[in-house]
Amino acid sequence: MVKEWGMSDKVGRVAVSEPSGRGPFMGGRMMRRPAQWGNNILGTVEQEVERLVNNSYMIAKKVLNENRALLEHLTGVLLEQETVSAEEFQMMLVEFKARTIDYAIIGKERNRGMLPFQNMTATY
Image (cartoon, rainbow, N blue to C red; front, side, top):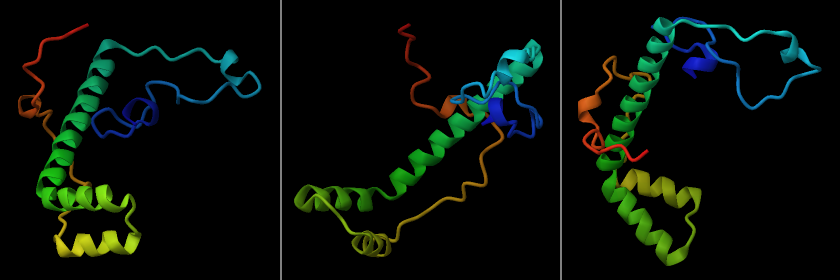
């Protein structure tokens, strides 16, 4: 998102890498040289990616924890009958007063210290 499409105010509207998953169209990529970026912009990109991943993790964990009762109920129903219709699921959402979070707001800090795996030793 940040590297391929430039979706970051801090990095700017530049694509630091080519979009992945696409082969060359009629040799179009063979004629272009890849752009060379300096360490400063690449470091900023890495910080932005880390910020987005860390904050997305924290948001996902918060949503799961706040809706734990719903998830446990859903687990039990799925174990019993294997499927849940859209109507049944919507009724569960209402019954358990499912809470959501505005995803338009992702924190500006990297929040490294708030992640549970920061104290783990590297295994590579």
